[in-house]
Amino acid sequence: MDSLPPHLADEFRKAASLIAYNTGQLIHSRGDEKPGISIVKTGGVHAGIYGANGSFVMTSTLGPGQTFGEFTLFAGLPRTHDMTAASRTEIFQLSAPRFIALYEREAEISRALLSTSLVRTHILLEMMDAMRRLPVRERTAKVLVTMMQTAGSENVFECRQSDLAFTLGLSRMSLSKALKQLSDLGLIETGYGRISLPDPRKMRDWVGRHCGAN
Image 1 (cartoon, one colour):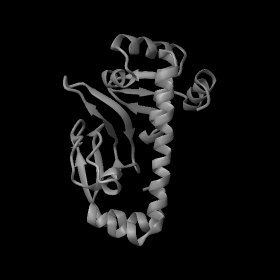
Image 2 (tube, rainbow, N blue to C red):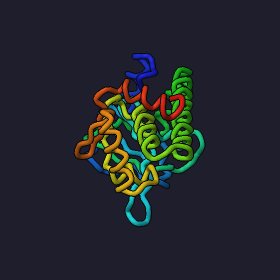
Image 3 (cartoon, rainbow, N blue to C red):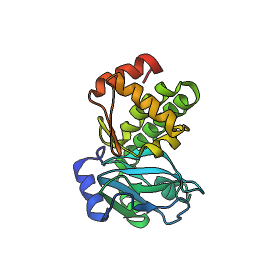
């Protein structure tokens, strides 16, 4: 939404339905086939996959202005992830017919979606690199910085530590140790359901020095 001209963003808002979700509420389930595009207005969305044992493997967090559902429109695919509200969240939901009408009329929508898709691909590759190559402490720091790029905040990441541990492929104990190490370095502060960066630039610089280019 932020990458669209003001007049086009207004058209999106007028064509969409604004729906509010409570913390933890399911927005879409993996496998849902109803096509449409969703745009986060306020709050945040956790994208991931629920396991058979009820665990949630989070792959990304989307903040205000971020979109999801493009696969259902352009590839005819079902929903690829379970999407849940990270906090009290408002989302513009745009049905397939209304979106296609705007898309066919305005070329700038195509450019905006392409830009968003490329950024997400870059973020995914950065996370895959961290998961395969880096030690636990550095992996944790790199993934936190990477996921904050789409979360809508450069200094606060709302997430349960159990979900983050599953995402990183770590035990709760290993994650707690890594978070304490980063906290002792003054890079993060932990709280209930959130991790904050007292100095985001310091964190990015540290990741750049210890984890390769960011």
